[in-house]
Amino acid sequence: MTPAVSGPPLRNEQQTEHQQARPHSVDSCSLIPCKLDGVSETMLWTLYDRACEARRPDGILADPHSVRICNAIDYDFQRHFGEPVGSFAARAVKIDQLLKQWLERHPNGLIVSLGEGLETQAHRVDNGQMRWVTVDLPAAIELRQHFLPSSERFRHVAASVFEPGWIEEIEPGPDLFIVVQGLFMYLEPEAVRRLFIKITEHFPGAEIAFDIIPRWFSQLTLWGVMQTPHYRLPPMPWGINSDEIAARLRGWSSAIAALSVLEYRVPRGWPKITEDLFRMNPLTRGHLPCLVHAEVRHH
Image 1 (cartoon, helix red, strand yellow):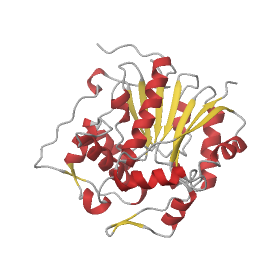
Image 2: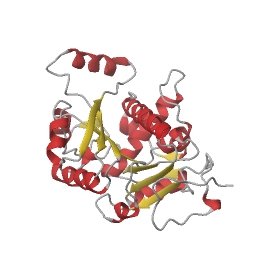
Image 3: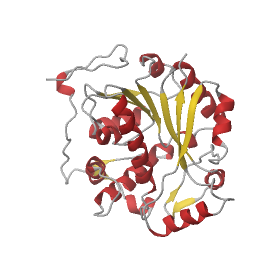
Image 4: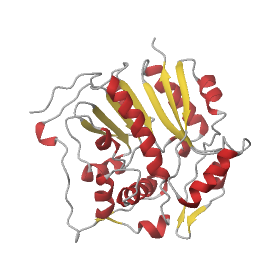
């Protein structure tokens, strides 16, 4: 029997028992073709990083769904993205921790994840009661539905994050957490500002977590930096240093009740050594990717 779900309801919610999420097996002889480009293709990059980390005996992330999906997609991950460093896995671990802590206080809460692609976070933090809504573009949702079918508690909304429909379906309240992982950096600064303000205006009492990249890395992508000889990073117009973000967000919205900047660290190797050197220098400490966790003031 499906457990009753409380917390902020989804308006016009229609769900059936047969939609309950279950493992989706894929024959190894029939890999799923995946023709994505631009920003949409980055969902494969983050998937690959998480899956490779999850395969490691010393990995920092347990993520069998990412391994399963990565194994089932017909795509040359290593040719495009090179050797994984675990940075996206580290980011996922930190957000997982935030969500698990929040779910201890809001076990029946609703988590809305914007532009998450093939992120499997919902399954990693699931407590059997919470609900999850994924909002992403139709092509991303179609691929996600194949591997991570929607269910009574896990719902997919095929829409741009700028369309008002998804906001209108979510009932505001304190039992709401909004995750914006790997999205804001691909938007123009003014688009980020508008979306952030819209979220804080429509969802008093909610919490929001998102990641940022530093200015120097944003500039590299605008210059067309190559990840490998076969993959050019898409432009990431919005970069901001971690020591600037608090003032920027409070300048955008007076509705922020609390705000914290959280580090996440690559687990090993030369990338870890490089990050550690950045953190040791006061001049570069604020020039690394990080997470932002904000609480929206109650009306």
